[in-house]
Image (cartoon, rainbow, N blue to C red):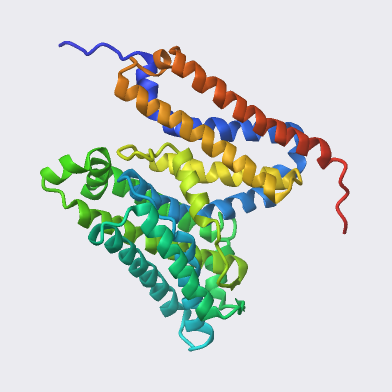
Amino acid sequence: MSTAPAKPFNERIEPYIAIIGPMVMILAILLFMGVVEPARYFRLTNLNLILLDAALYMPMAMAMTFVITQRGIDLSIGSIAALSAILMAFLIKQYGFSVYIAVPIAVMLGALMGLINGLIITRLNVPDLIGTLAMDLVYRGFALVIAKGLVLARFPDFLTEIGRGQIPGFVPVPVLIGIATMIAGYVLLRRTYFGRYTIAIGSNPEAADLTGIGVKRHKVYAYVLCGACAAIGGILLTGKLNAIQATSAPYFNLHVIAAVVVGGTSLFGGRASMLGSFAGVLLLSMMINALVTLRIEFFWQSVASGVVIVSSVALYTWMQKKDRDGAGGLLAGLQTPDGQKMLRFSALLIGLLIGLLAIGGIFAGDVNPSG
Protein backbone atom coordinates (compact mmCIF):
# COMPACT_ATOMS: atom_id res chain seq x y z
CA MET A 1 0.00 0.00 0.00
CA SER A 2 1.65 3.19 -1.21
CA THR A 3 1.45 6.41 0.68
CA ALA A 4 1.61 9.88 -0.82
CA PRO A 5 4.77 11.84 -0.01
CA ALA A 6 4.37 14.40 2.74
CA LYS A 7 3.88 17.94 1.52
CA PRO A 8 6.53 20.55 2.37
CA PHE A 9 5.82 22.69 5.42
CA ASN A 10 5.20 25.86 3.41
CA GLU A 11 2.54 24.08 1.31
CA ARG A 12 0.84 22.65 4.39
CA ILE A 13 0.69 26.00 6.16
CA GLU A 14 -0.37 28.08 3.15
CA PRO A 15 -4.15 27.33 3.40
CA TYR A 16 -4.12 28.67 6.96
CA ILE A 17 -2.36 31.97 6.23
CA ALA A 18 -5.71 33.81 6.32
CA ILE A 19 -6.22 32.92 9.98
CA ILE A 20 -2.52 32.97 10.96
CA GLY A 21 -2.05 36.59 9.82
CA PRO A 22 -4.64 38.21 12.13
CA MET A 23 -3.81 35.80 14.95
CA VAL A 24 -0.16 36.89 14.85
CA MET A 25 -1.28 40.53 15.04
CA ILE A 26 -3.60 39.70 17.94
CA LEU A 27 -0.69 38.04 19.75
CA ALA A 28 1.49 41.10 19.08
CA ILE A 29 -1.15 43.40 20.61
CA LEU A 30 -1.45 41.13 23.66
CA LEU A 31 2.31 41.08 24.16
CA PHE A 32 2.65 44.84 23.71
CA MET A 33 -0.22 45.67 26.07
CA GLY A 34 1.08 43.10 28.53
CA VAL A 35 4.24 45.19 28.79
CA VAL A 36 2.77 48.69 28.58
CA GLU A 37 -0.66 48.54 30.28
CA PRO A 38 -1.26 45.05 31.69
CA ALA A 39 -3.36 46.15 34.67
CA ARG A 40 -5.88 48.17 32.64
CA TYR A 41 -5.99 46.17 29.41
CA PHE A 42 -6.38 42.70 30.92
CA ARG A 43 -9.06 43.61 33.42
CA LEU A 44 -12.12 41.40 33.12
CA THR A 45 -14.34 44.43 32.50
CA ASN A 46 -12.11 45.58 29.65
CA LEU A 47 -12.02 42.14 28.03
CA ASN A 48 -15.81 42.15 28.28
CA LEU A 49 -15.88 45.49 26.44
CA ILE A 50 -13.71 44.04 23.66
CA LEU A 51 -16.06 41.09 23.22
CA LEU A 52 -19.15 43.33 23.23
CA ASP A 53 -17.62 45.58 20.59
CA ALA A 54 -16.57 42.63 18.41
CA ALA A 55 -19.99 40.97 18.72
CA LEU A 56 -21.63 44.04 17.21
CA TYR A 57 -19.80 43.48 13.92
CA MET A 58 -19.81 39.67 13.74
CA PRO A 59 -23.17 39.22 11.95
CA MET A 60 -22.29 41.86 9.36
CA ALA A 61 -18.78 40.46 8.85
CA MET A 62 -20.28 37.02 8.24
CA ALA A 63 -22.59 38.32 5.51
CA MET A 64 -19.97 40.66 4.02
CA THR A 65 -17.66 37.67 3.59
CA PHE A 66 -20.11 36.20 1.08
CA VAL A 67 -20.57 39.51 -0.74
CA ILE A 68 -16.85 40.20 -1.10
CA THR A 69 -16.05 36.59 -2.02
CA GLN A 70 -18.28 36.91 -5.09
CA ARG A 71 -16.47 40.13 -6.12
CA GLY A 72 -19.06 42.46 -4.59
CA ILE A 73 -19.05 45.17 -1.95
CA ASP A 74 -21.76 46.69 0.22
CA LEU A 75 -21.17 50.24 1.43
CA SER A 76 -24.73 50.69 2.67
CA ILE A 77 -24.73 48.40 5.72
CA GLY A 78 -24.29 51.28 8.19
CA SER A 79 -27.31 53.10 6.81
CA ILE A 80 -29.34 49.87 6.66
CA ALA A 81 -28.48 49.22 10.30
CA ALA A 82 -29.52 52.76 11.31
CA LEU A 83 -32.74 52.82 9.26
CA SER A 84 -33.82 49.35 10.40
CA ALA A 85 -33.20 50.29 14.02
CA ILE A 86 -35.02 53.62 13.63
CA LEU A 87 -38.07 51.90 12.13
CA MET A 88 -38.00 49.28 14.90
CA ALA A 89 -37.77 52.02 17.52
CA PHE A 90 -40.75 53.88 16.06
CA LEU A 91 -42.81 50.69 15.99
CA ILE A 92 -42.07 50.20 19.69
CA LYS A 93 -42.19 53.78 20.97
CA GLN A 94 -44.77 55.44 18.74
CA TYR A 95 -47.07 52.62 17.68
CA GLY A 96 -46.94 50.34 20.71
CA PHE A 97 -45.68 47.23 18.91
CA SER A 98 -44.33 44.42 21.05
CA VAL A 99 -40.56 44.16 20.91
CA TYR A 100 -41.01 40.50 19.94
CA ILE A 101 -42.77 41.66 16.77
CA ALA A 102 -40.73 44.80 16.07
CA VAL A 103 -37.37 42.99 16.09
CA PRO A 104 -38.28 40.43 13.36
CA ILE A 105 -39.88 43.22 11.32
CA ALA A 106 -36.59 45.16 11.52
CA VAL A 107 -34.66 42.15 10.24
CA MET A 108 -37.12 41.70 7.37
CA LEU A 109 -36.83 45.41 6.49
CA GLY A 110 -33.05 45.04 6.42
CA ALA A 111 -33.41 42.03 4.11
CA LEU A 112 -35.73 44.09 1.89
CA MET A 113 -33.13 46.84 1.61
CA GLY A 114 -30.54 44.22 0.75
CA LEU A 115 -32.89 42.89 -1.93
CA ILE A 116 -33.18 46.39 -3.40
CA ASN A 117 -29.37 46.64 -3.49
CA GLY A 118 -29.10 43.29 -5.22
CA LEU A 119 -31.73 44.14 -7.84
CA ILE A 120 -30.08 47.49 -8.60
CA ILE A 121 -26.75 45.75 -9.15
CA THR A 122 -28.01 42.75 -11.14
CA ARG A 123 -31.00 44.17 -13.03
CA LEU A 124 -29.83 47.71 -13.69
CA ASN A 125 -26.19 46.64 -14.10
CA VAL A 126 -24.96 49.32 -11.72
CA PRO A 127 -21.48 48.50 -10.32
CA ASP A 128 -21.59 47.26 -6.72
CA LEU A 129 -19.48 50.15 -5.44
CA ILE A 130 -21.62 52.87 -7.02
CA GLY A 131 -24.95 51.16 -6.40
CA THR A 132 -24.44 50.52 -2.70
CA LEU A 133 -22.81 53.93 -2.16
CA ALA A 134 -25.86 55.61 -3.71
CA MET A 135 -28.24 53.50 -1.63
CA ASP A 136 -26.22 54.33 1.46
CA LEU A 137 -27.19 57.97 0.87
CA VAL A 138 -30.81 57.00 0.20
CA TYR A 139 -31.21 54.89 3.35
CA ARG A 140 -29.43 57.44 5.53
CA GLY A 141 -31.65 60.16 4.08
CA PHE A 142 -34.78 58.16 4.91
CA ALA A 143 -33.49 57.64 8.47
CA LEU A 144 -32.92 61.39 8.88
CA VAL A 145 -36.36 62.22 7.46
CA ILE A 146 -38.15 59.71 9.69
CA ALA A 147 -36.26 60.49 12.91
CA LYS A 148 -36.33 64.31 12.45
CA GLY A 149 -33.39 64.71 14.81
CA LEU A 150 -34.96 62.66 17.62
CA VAL A 151 -32.96 60.33 19.83
CA LEU A 152 -35.17 57.35 20.65
CA ALA A 153 -34.25 55.78 23.97
CA ARG A 154 -35.38 53.61 26.90
CA PHE A 155 -36.51 50.42 25.27
CA PRO A 156 -37.97 47.26 26.85
CA ASP A 157 -35.65 45.01 28.82
CA PHE A 158 -35.66 42.32 26.14
CA LEU A 159 -33.92 44.66 23.69
CA THR A 160 -31.27 45.77 26.18
CA GLU A 161 -30.65 42.13 27.09
CA ILE A 162 -29.97 41.43 23.42
CA GLY A 163 -27.52 44.33 23.22
CA ARG A 164 -25.65 44.12 26.52
CA GLY A 165 -27.14 41.40 28.71
CA GLN A 166 -25.08 38.62 30.19
CA ILE A 167 -25.88 35.06 31.15
CA PRO A 168 -24.69 34.74 34.78
CA GLY A 169 -21.33 33.02 34.88
CA PHE A 170 -21.15 32.94 31.09
CA VAL A 171 -20.43 35.21 28.13
CA PRO A 172 -22.56 38.25 27.20
CA VAL A 173 -25.72 37.58 25.18
CA PRO A 174 -24.59 39.64 22.13
CA VAL A 175 -21.37 37.62 22.01
CA LEU A 176 -23.42 34.43 21.82
CA ILE A 177 -25.48 35.95 19.01
CA GLY A 178 -22.37 37.07 17.15
CA ILE A 179 -20.59 33.72 17.48
CA ALA A 180 -23.78 31.89 16.44
CA THR A 181 -23.93 33.94 13.22
CA MET A 182 -20.26 33.25 12.50
CA ILE A 183 -20.81 29.51 12.99
CA ALA A 184 -23.84 29.65 10.71
CA GLY A 185 -21.75 31.50 8.13
CA TYR A 186 -18.99 28.90 8.35
CA VAL A 187 -21.49 26.10 7.74
CA LEU A 188 -23.02 28.01 4.81
CA LEU A 189 -19.62 28.66 3.28
CA ARG A 190 -18.10 25.20 3.69
CA ARG A 191 -21.03 22.78 3.79
CA THR A 192 -23.69 24.11 1.42
CA TYR A 193 -24.17 24.87 -2.26
CA PHE A 194 -24.61 28.52 -1.31
CA GLY A 195 -21.00 28.70 -0.17
CA ARG A 196 -19.67 26.66 -3.09
CA TYR A 197 -21.52 28.82 -5.60
CA THR A 198 -20.24 31.96 -3.89
CA ILE A 199 -16.61 30.85 -4.29
CA ALA A 200 -17.24 29.70 -7.86
CA ILE A 201 -18.78 33.04 -8.83
CA GLY A 202 -15.93 34.95 -7.25
CA SER A 203 -13.32 32.80 -8.96
CA ASN A 204 -14.82 33.07 -12.46
CA PRO A 205 -18.35 34.49 -12.98
CA GLU A 206 -18.43 33.53 -16.67
CA ALA A 207 -17.48 29.93 -16.00
CA ALA A 208 -19.97 29.73 -13.14
CA ASP A 209 -22.70 30.98 -15.45
CA LEU A 210 -21.80 28.39 -18.10
CA THR A 211 -22.06 25.59 -15.53
CA GLY A 212 -25.67 26.54 -14.82
CA ILE A 213 -25.25 28.62 -11.65
CA GLY A 214 -27.69 31.52 -11.54
CA VAL A 215 -25.02 34.15 -10.98
CA LYS A 216 -27.32 37.17 -10.77
CA ARG A 217 -29.84 35.39 -8.57
CA HIS A 218 -27.10 34.19 -6.25
CA LYS A 219 -25.69 37.69 -5.96
CA VAL A 220 -29.10 38.95 -4.90
CA TYR A 221 -29.23 36.27 -2.19
CA ALA A 222 -25.89 37.47 -0.80
CA TYR A 223 -27.10 41.08 -0.62
CA VAL A 224 -30.34 40.02 1.05
CA LEU A 225 -28.29 38.19 3.68
CA CYS A 226 -26.07 41.26 4.10
CA GLY A 227 -29.09 43.53 4.59
CA ALA A 228 -30.64 41.21 7.19
CA CYS A 229 -27.35 40.97 9.11
CA ALA A 230 -26.94 44.75 8.96
CA ALA A 231 -30.35 45.04 10.60
CA ILE A 232 -29.20 42.61 13.30
CA GLY A 233 -26.20 44.88 13.85
CA GLY A 234 -28.55 47.85 14.22
CA ILE A 235 -30.65 45.94 16.75
CA LEU A 236 -27.55 44.99 18.76
CA LEU A 237 -26.37 48.61 18.69
CA THR A 238 -29.78 49.85 19.89
CA GLY A 239 -29.80 47.36 22.73
CA LYS A 240 -26.22 48.15 23.68
CA LEU A 241 -26.82 51.90 23.91
CA ASN A 242 -30.51 51.65 24.85
CA ALA A 243 -30.92 54.44 22.29
CA ILE A 244 -30.78 55.05 18.55
CA GLN A 245 -30.69 58.04 16.22
CA ALA A 246 -30.49 58.56 12.47
CA THR A 247 -26.75 59.33 12.49
CA SER A 248 -25.83 56.09 14.28
CA ALA A 249 -23.46 53.50 12.76
CA PRO A 250 -21.63 55.93 10.42
CA TYR A 251 -18.50 53.77 9.98
CA PHE A 252 -20.00 50.28 10.11
CA ASN A 253 -19.24 49.68 6.43
CA LEU A 254 -15.53 50.49 6.65
CA HIS A 255 -15.06 48.59 9.91
CA VAL A 256 -16.77 45.46 8.61
CA ILE A 257 -15.04 45.49 5.22
CA ALA A 258 -11.70 46.01 6.97
CA ALA A 259 -12.31 43.06 9.28
CA VAL A 260 -13.23 40.77 6.40
CA VAL A 261 -10.24 41.82 4.26
CA VAL A 262 -7.82 41.62 7.19
CA GLY A 263 -9.15 38.09 7.76
CA GLY A 264 -7.99 36.98 4.33
CA THR A 265 -11.09 37.22 2.13
CA SER A 266 -9.89 38.48 -1.24
CA LEU A 267 -11.30 41.69 -2.68
CA PHE A 268 -10.74 40.08 -6.08
CA GLY A 269 -13.14 37.25 -5.24
CA GLY A 270 -12.83 33.48 -5.01
CA ARG A 271 -10.96 33.35 -1.69
CA ALA A 272 -12.87 33.34 1.61
CA SER A 273 -12.21 32.56 5.26
CA MET A 274 -15.00 32.76 7.81
CA LEU A 275 -12.56 32.03 10.63
CA GLY A 276 -10.39 34.80 9.23
CA SER A 277 -13.32 37.22 9.28
CA PHE A 278 -13.96 36.30 12.92
CA ALA A 279 -10.29 36.89 13.75
CA GLY A 280 -10.35 40.16 11.79
CA VAL A 281 -13.31 41.47 13.80
CA LEU A 282 -11.60 40.49 17.04
CA LEU A 283 -8.30 42.05 15.93
CA LEU A 284 -9.82 45.45 15.08
CA SER A 285 -11.80 45.55 18.33
CA MET A 286 -8.67 44.69 20.34
CA MET A 287 -6.59 47.27 18.49
CA ILE A 288 -9.11 50.08 18.95
CA ASN A 289 -9.54 49.16 22.61
CA ALA A 290 -5.75 49.21 23.03
CA LEU A 291 -5.59 52.70 21.53
CA VAL A 292 -8.36 53.87 23.86
CA THR A 293 -6.57 52.28 26.83
CA LEU A 294 -3.42 54.20 25.85
CA ARG A 295 -5.51 57.39 25.68
CA ILE A 296 -4.71 58.00 22.02
CA GLU A 297 -7.06 60.37 20.21
CA PHE A 298 -9.89 59.00 18.10
CA PHE A 299 -8.33 60.39 14.91
CA TRP A 300 -5.15 58.40 15.50
CA GLN A 301 -7.32 55.32 15.96
CA SER A 302 -8.48 55.80 12.38
CA VAL A 303 -4.85 56.10 11.25
CA ALA A 304 -3.95 52.85 13.01
CA SER A 305 -6.93 51.05 11.47
CA GLY A 306 -5.87 52.26 8.04
CA VAL A 307 -2.32 50.99 8.58
CA VAL A 308 -3.57 47.51 9.44
CA ILE A 309 -5.92 47.47 6.43
CA VAL A 310 -3.24 48.59 3.96
CA SER A 311 -0.73 46.05 5.30
CA SER A 312 -3.26 43.21 5.10
CA VAL A 313 -4.49 44.07 1.62
CA ALA A 314 -0.91 44.38 0.36
CA LEU A 315 -0.07 40.96 1.78
CA TYR A 316 -3.12 39.15 0.39
CA THR A 317 -2.89 40.90 -2.99
CA TRP A 318 0.72 39.81 -3.27
CA MET A 319 -0.22 36.26 -2.23
CA GLN A 320 -2.89 36.06 -4.90
CA LYS A 321 -0.47 37.37 -7.56
CA LYS A 322 2.04 34.77 -6.40
CA ASP A 323 -0.59 32.06 -6.85
CA ARG A 324 -1.24 33.23 -10.41
CA ASP A 325 2.46 33.47 -11.27
CA GLY A 326 3.27 30.10 -9.73
CA ALA A 327 6.11 31.22 -7.47
CA GLY A 328 6.38 27.74 -5.93
CA GLY A 329 4.95 28.24 -2.46
CA LEU A 330 4.82 30.96 0.14
CA LEU A 331 8.39 30.78 1.36
CA ALA A 332 9.77 30.72 -2.18
CA GLY A 333 7.58 33.68 -3.06
CA LEU A 334 8.91 35.66 -0.11
CA GLN A 335 12.44 35.28 -1.48
CA THR A 336 11.58 36.95 -4.78
CA PRO A 337 12.27 40.70 -5.30
CA ASP A 338 8.53 41.46 -5.15
CA GLY A 339 8.23 39.43 -1.97
CA GLN A 340 11.09 41.28 -0.35
CA LYS A 341 9.57 44.64 -1.29
CA MET A 342 6.23 43.59 0.17
CA LEU A 343 7.88 42.48 3.41
CA ARG A 344 9.83 45.73 3.78
CA PHE A 345 6.77 47.87 3.09
CA SER A 346 4.59 45.88 5.50
CA ALA A 347 7.32 46.04 8.15
CA LEU A 348 7.49 49.82 7.74
CA LEU A 349 3.73 50.22 8.17
CA ILE A 350 3.58 47.89 11.16
CA GLY A 351 6.59 49.69 12.66
CA LEU A 352 4.71 52.97 12.38
CA LEU A 353 1.75 51.40 14.17
CA ILE A 354 3.97 50.04 16.96
CA GLY A 355 5.58 53.47 17.26
CA LEU A 356 2.15 55.03 17.65
CA LEU A 357 1.26 52.54 20.37
CA ALA A 358 4.60 53.19 22.09
CA ILE A 359 4.02 56.95 22.11
CA GLY A 360 0.59 56.38 23.59
CA GLY A 361 2.06 54.09 26.22
CA ILE A 362 4.67 56.69 27.20
CA PHE A 363 2.15 59.49 27.62
CA ALA A 364 -0.53 57.26 29.19
CA GLY A 365 1.31 57.30 32.48
CA ASP A 366 1.38 61.11 32.55
CA VAL A 367 -2.40 61.47 32.48
CA ASN A 368 -4.25 61.42 35.77
CA PRO A 369 -7.88 60.50 35.20
CA SER A 370 -10.30 62.63 37.14
CA GLY A 371 -12.91 61.19 39.41
